[in-house]
Image 1 (cartoon, helix red, strand yellow):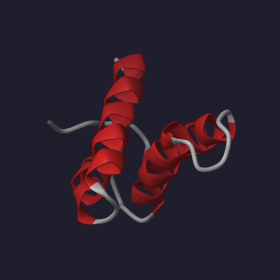
Image 2: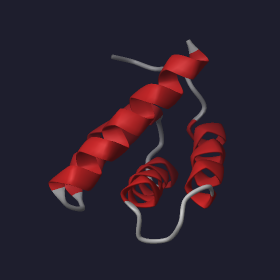
Image 3: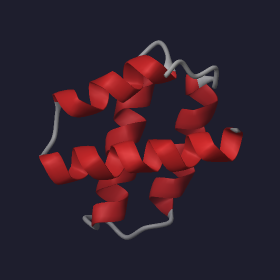
Image 4: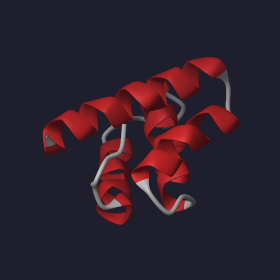
Length: 75
């Protein structure tokens, strides 16, 4: 799926999402994982692929789900 959402803008929103949760919680880990993928990738689709390249499986799954949730908000 090709997404035409600005990765920088999305990263800023995900960063704010991470701040809503306490440190070391699964929600914070997922948001930070997604943020890391977004800021190191040129596009949202590249970030989606990058999610699976680091971290543990649960955090990867949670980050992918969070990305899906944010993309639905843009639709």
